[in-house]
Length: 406
Ligand code: AMP
Image 1 (cartoon, rainbow, N blue to C red):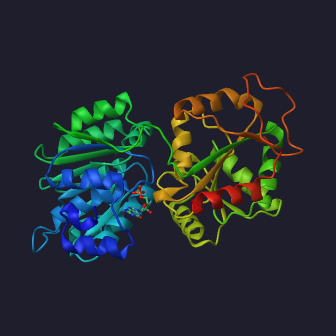
Image 2: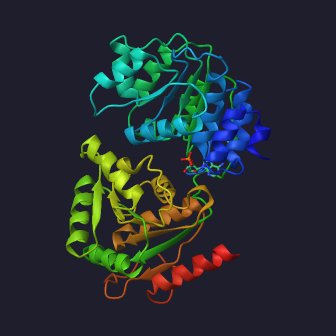
Image 3: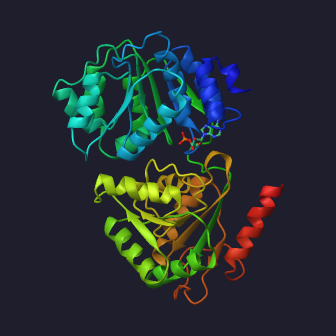
């Protein structure tokens, strides 16, 4: 079905055509007609499946219904991070470019004043992180009496980041008669509890098996000694000259240290994590997006909401302790139907963590070694038959090429 068949206003159909979208993604096909009827929706979808447009398009449709938009707050999108707030705002501007609506992003780590000014001038749509939104609420900068639609985006992350009390306070302040849409990569018990509190008679939309990475991701594991991880990564990055690579580390300190190590070894990289100033984070992200930075080393928190097209390779420098974090990380590649590669550097102490991830995803990934950096000890869990020694660059390219031709 084309976008024109979903019941959206022509200005929106025109805007998505200008974005180059040919057909709605499955989550959009399911969610948009439902949301247009005013129903509450819980959407669980893989990352990078187009869920932002799935909620923004029906919201913009509703807001544009008035011929003269009032610029009084009618729709609120709550997100876990500043980057995601900026990104959703950017999407709202793109999809709403033929409408006369005003939107603002409200998040912490930057001055209050410009946000206060924007709220005073009047906005139809606010995209906010919960803490800063509450700050503005407390100072009387917000009139919530006309809010008709609430979106809780990446609800699982909001809860993981401890925003539950803030979200509850915001829910209590919103009108009961509203539409609520909740999106989450995974629907845990906590998310389910939040949904029962925030939504009424909702319809669940599930376009993918829970906790499954996009089909276009090819997974691989390199078994390496912990001490050699950095050098193994350097040799992988030198071998396979991917254009845009995102490397995940568990800690902020680890991200800085690794970026420094890569630079020293002739592989220029930038680090991004929660201790960097907001302006630096946005600049780094823009450099990455524009190709001025080819390799970005990030922590999970900073990476949330990164929507950069054509990330060809995601590297897990550490195996995540929470298997669902793996799904989220690798979701940064192979977005919107593209192909991508996810490589994990696994030291012997991480074998069990990797086994948990494979169990969650329901697949066993091929293991390889980086010649010269093999682990010294034998695995304590049975490992599947190892692939032939590393010849990753050409072999991966060839396989990905042939996948594309199919
Ligand atoms: P999201 O899951 O919302 O972060 O979207 C992932 C990416 O898919 C973004 O870069 C969108 O611009 C893109 N996208 C969203 N909807 C479509 C569509 N119908 N066709 C192609 N790309 C899309």
